Structures are given as C-alpha cells and as structure tokens.
Image (tube, rainbow, N blue to C red; front, side):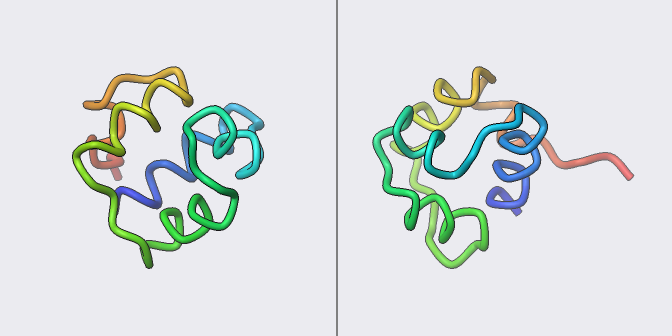
Length: 66
C-alpha cells in the first residue's frame, strides 16, 4: 500500500516522521497514520509527499518488486 511505500522511502533517506511532516506540511501524527494506512492519501497529498521525499509521484505509486 502507499503508506508502506512512503515509510520505506522515508526510512531509506534516514528521515524521521517529524521531518517528513515538516517538509510536506503534515503533522507527525498524520504521517504516522499515512504510513500505517489508517489515513487515506489524496491526490493532492501525493505531490507534497513526493517533493518532501525527493522522489516523483510515480515513485510513490510504484509497487515494490518481490
């Protein structure tokens, strides 16, 4: 799911949920909910998260191989 993908990318960049939240305009709590797939990610959220993570929106939507 997208929350898992966001968490994987965030962790690969040694970024905390708080840092991602600050960079994307979300709270740490919202990031936590997104990553645990209990908060839906809207189409408007994707560019904010992608920019904060330094990836493209398509990178967020890609399924992990394997």
